[in-house]
Image (tube, rainbow, N blue to C red; front, top):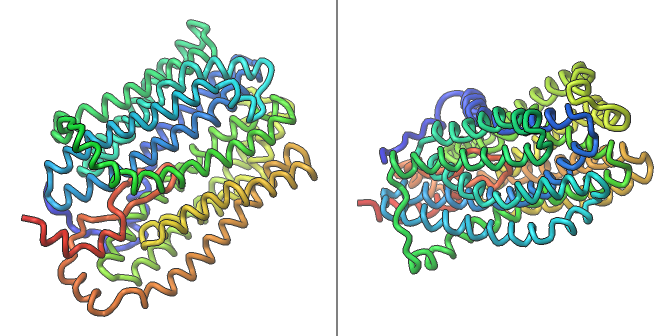
Length: 490
């Protein structure tokens, strides 16, 4: 693999942010738009319990997908490190080892969840017709989750090899297949939510095929499986995967708490919340992508001891988040009637989505601010800060606020409480980030600055443990060991 140039240590940091975020958001947008269309097609059937069923099922499936994100982050981090150190054979061993680990971990979790599907749905408030439809939907879709784990891990390996285009195209082709099959299975074959689930299974298999094939054929990065090598690699894999998994599952846990709180007010509210859940990642896809895109920018400049550019990158990232969220919130406010009509929402579902478009969407600004803060913590040697903030928001930032909001304002109060919790933890993240930035200049000794300036190779980036990130690389703490890596290269 050719040596990479540290292109982010010069030029406009704003241009780098916009370019990287734009590229990353394309793949995410294609994935989330398909989910949104999925919900739209189901809503067109005119049965609110079907939309509610997908909402309940999506909450649980999100949990297993978050585990897949954790193992894919380990893939990107470890394989990037081996390729950066020109240890291609080691990278090949790691790719097959992580693919096997990702499959086994997800298969075990998925098996347990599949066995307890009725109990899990009851736990988050599903009942009646919505419960039955959600159960049927999950029995088809949930067992295919290991395919997601393999597809995500293969995509991370492609990005680690510098092939972000093929990684993105795998996701896009999966989205295209889903978009084609959805209306056929739902309307032509009249399979309802079961048809939507089957289309998603085929879509997942498509993503895996288009991610794994180039990894084998073009890059020759999948080595032969060796049980002994696999066992020896587990410590390194889980050293990265476990913190990433715990960081990422905080989001679906918080979402499950909110879904459960909404469910007590009826299926109409759950249907509206399900639409809101599908709409949010589409309209804010650029923010999700930005949280991963700024990682390499921060990492290269921190490695080059350009603390001024690190701070500038973070300021510009927060500016992009603010402007983008304001523009999207204004658009949602004026388009709310078209949105509820497109999904055939009436009554309480209509009210919930209109409340989101009018009052709640703007508070995603604080979610975006926490994404940026978490990215900086992961890249600047404080990954536990990120984990603590995510877990804290999913628990302390959700349970009391949602309970209080529900007590005061009913179903809409659940949204108000969640938004207030997001605001509080967004501000906590910003204050913590400000404090950490003030310490940066004193944390890097002068001798180390000179050493890094002279010797650092910027093929090493930074690991990002943020949900929906599309740029995986090496943990920033590895930069401290850069002299050792350079000495090992032949």
